[in-house]
Amino acid sequence: MVEIWLPYGDSEVCVRIPAASLLDVIKPKDVDVPPDPREEIRSALKNPVGDKSIEDIAKSETKVSIVLKESLLQINQMIIHTLIDELRSAGIRDEDVTLIIAHDPFRLSSEHILSSDTGLFERLRIIRHNYRDCESVYFRSHSGIKFYLNRNFLEADVKILIGTVEPHPILGYTGGWELIIPGIADTNSSNMIFKLGLDEITRRGRLKDNPVYEEISGAAEKVHVDLALHIVMNGEFRVVKAFAGEVNKSFLEAVKFADSIYRIPVEDRADIVFISPGGSYFDATFQESTLCLDTALNVLGRKKDLVLVAECSHGFGDKEFLETILKYSNLRLLRKDLERSFSIQKLMAYRLINVLQRINLSIVTAMPNYYISKIPNLKVARTANEAYRMLIESSRDKGKISLIPYGSLTIPSVKS
Image 1 (cartoon, rainbow, N blue to C red):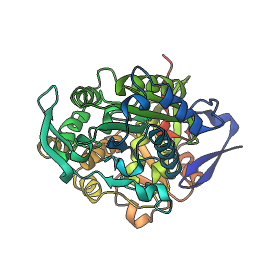
Image 2: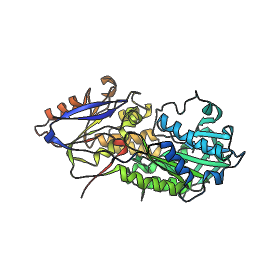
Image 3: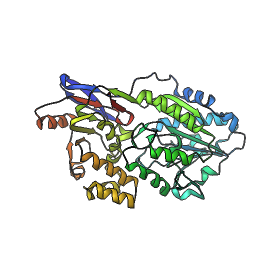
Image 4: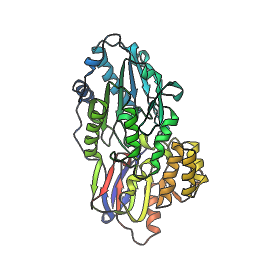
């Protein structure tokens, strides 16, 4: 027997399987980690990709607006401390900086974004984006969608975007112009764009011919941004590379590097797949945990047995997500509802129901049975080993098993 440990909330769980049944463990490639991540970020800021540096764009008494995509608390703090140091060197006072926490409709829970017990974060003006803060002036996307942006961002002299670059099942990758839409945009325009995610052409790691990415980038490019900072992390959430400069150029450079880590060739499909979203940052709720399921579908064979290992310490997720799952068993009816009255929560429910109707899904979770058992076609186990026993008891053939410890940060593809 072999023991494989999978991230589960802030800890790990073990699954024991016969050595002969183990096909592979699919995870991001190991890469060298900079000894000083703050120096890596500082170097990127001083050597921007295809555009001006902070010293070129920021002057004394300049009003600066920074849009920050939520990440791990320690990553947020490290990025902001380093960036503020560079702004200070350019003559910018802390009091002239507004930090806008971007809206992410796919994430419901978050840690405290920045610690308030330090002098720096008491001096900065920190706000969380609210669609009510959007300016009355609007921009148009290529297809004619009107979108409105946060007035605090538009009124600043210098505009900076900060985000991590990670695989995403609909956007392709996070980062780039996503920090504008949906990050600081109104809800209606964001929904109209994400409605394009109903089609399976939008998938993890795909930017080319991705209608959601193309619509967002085509629209947001009309907005002036002075500088972007993109961070790539490894499976253990350590900074491995930073890219700064013009939004699109630095984003595409970051995506190219991220692809070299996250995109993993796989020899064969598995009969059983165990997948963890990657720990507490990705599995705080059941709703957020399901975002990684498309990763496993890429390597699942004909038996179609999938086990999701997710603690879900914050419960089920959005109320509308649960209500939609319980209301609809017919995908065509749900699609009509989405076309008539779209929301991100219903889109995520649509994607989950589609999975439940195609494969045998089990979950290892801390959520109470009476709560999670409401979902049709979903089996519940208390431990990963119990889930494995349930699967082999239902089939004489144990089959080959693949395990994906960091499902949210992995793009597996079976070799043709």
